[in-house]
Image: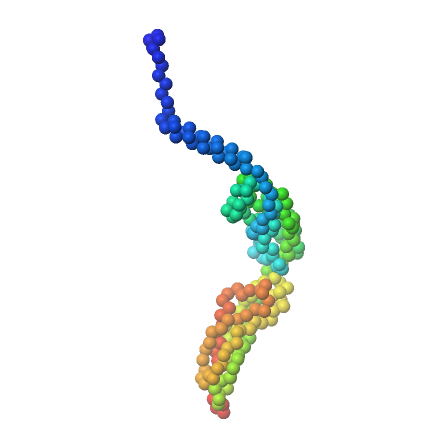
Length: 223
């Protein structure tokens, strides 16, 4: 290089855009960091996972828990907390009975920067029961009367039994299920009607479709 020759400085391409982006990022960081923290309480939904298939939760299962949290107004907005849930892992449940779970920071999927303070209630006690199934008979209910001069010989459900499931104690207490009332409404010949079966206990369910076909055998009186 010749002595005294000036060295030229080449500015990077798009230097204006890069400096502008950097300035914008700094301003956003200052705005966010300057936003004061607030404390609020939110009701978040409760989810359960990993419960072994031979068990189920009985009784009143809480659907939400109130958590007290701290963060900025934007972090604690409805949009910011839209995906927040309280998640309880029931994989440790290995027997029927009462199980207590403590609500902690690890139970919540809070957004980054949001701090968990406390929960109300601070613990959940769940009643765990062993799952039971059995087949119970279907009892047909009828309403109304067949046409004059005819009588109902039989009302046969198909299938004659349905499988139900629930906690052992509740399933053991159910001997049968009944159909919605089948309207005989002036019928003068044998026919078949489809109706729904019904379980009186809301915590017991059908294992398959509750729809039953009822075969009505109707004959003329005196035959």
